[in-house]
Amino acid sequence: MARTIVGVLRGGTSDEYNLSLKTGAAIISALLEDRYETRDILVDRNGVWHARGIPMEVPRALAQIDVVINGMHGGIGEDGTVQRLLEKVGIAYTGSRAHGSWLSLNKIRAREVLQKAGIRMPRGVAFTLSNGLNTAEMAQAVFSEFGPPYIIKPPSEGASYGIRLAVHLLELPDAIGDVLDEFGAALIEEYVLGNEASVGVIEDFRGQELYVLPPAHVLIPEGERFLSSAAHEDALAQHMCPSNFTQEEKRAIEDLARRAHRALGLSHFSRADIINTRRGSYLLEINALPGLYAGASFPVMLEAVGSSTEEFIGHAIALAKH
Image 1: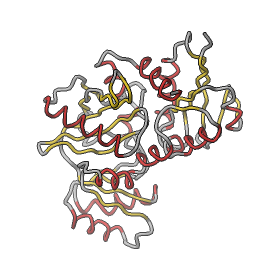
Image 2 (image 1 turned 90 degrees about the vertical axis):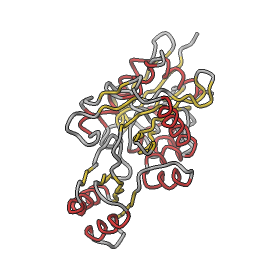
Image 3 (image 1 turned 60 degrees about the vertical axis):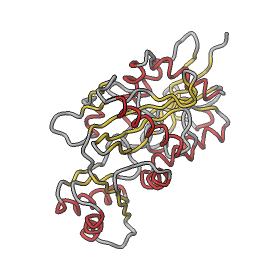
């Protein structure tokens, strides 16, 4: 039987470059040699594509490939750019289509869609450089909606890159200014205290249209108020799965992840970050491209149900070729 030729995309233009290299390496390791012929395709920080270590144009880098596994976190890997390129050259690929991927990466737009679908999220206010307010006025506008502490996020970054915490109102203008200066827009959310959960969704898996993996309880490193980008990079977080959430809490978390996946029109798989509180569960955000690197939650959740990264990758390829 001829082996399927699989191109593995990794790298990219976002701050998650190093995490993408690790996810790509995990994917390559999971591709069984008797079933797949693997092509390692690197997109460097400047967006230049490389195959066999040589810079080349996109069509040439993708020549003779049957299916692409996208392992690029953030940037062009998740904002719809790569998805449209792959569709233009007619190559099947894993993961969400261009619009769903862009939507999940754009936290401001995603909030609008998710809240319209009735999905509970922390309260939030967004600003751009064109708002015409100074940062003190922005801070007052936020304070009129909800009180501190505040989480200040860049709208289109993942893995906690660029996130600030303002414990007091007086800290908020500078934090907003820092994020605006670096990213051009800022999303300010209320800091919701609770236990963080990570939960994966896989389409058409084990006889279910939307199979939800058991939630992993994310144990944040001691002394931190949220999972920082350094914790992602250095695999400092622990993921307890099976978790100690009650059955009722697990059902609520799983239902939230399932509804969010549908609301954003995602494809093949996703991973949701959720805060579980005494008042119920709140969706923080949803990721169209789950990390598979060491220290990420998705492989831990797969193992908890007797699956593996190898099985998941094989299933993703089947979904892409369907």
